[in-house]
Image (cartoon, rainbow, N blue to C red; front, side, top):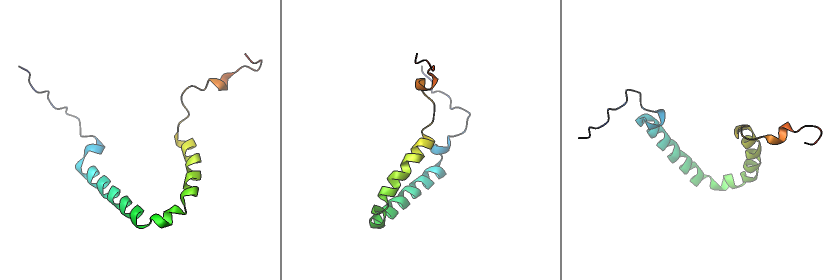
Length: 77
């Protein structure tokens, strides 16, 4: 017979805790309310927010991966 696997003795991940889920739900409701009530004000800021995304994406994108173009020899090979 198959017996159920014993639960791990580790702690619950942060994002699965009830208090974290409650705070995330409250934050989502607050953001929805603010966007719904102040949408007209935010429309004027969209161009600036899009321009702000460029440096933020550059900072948080990470610089790993294949950067083969950085290691070229000076003789072009």
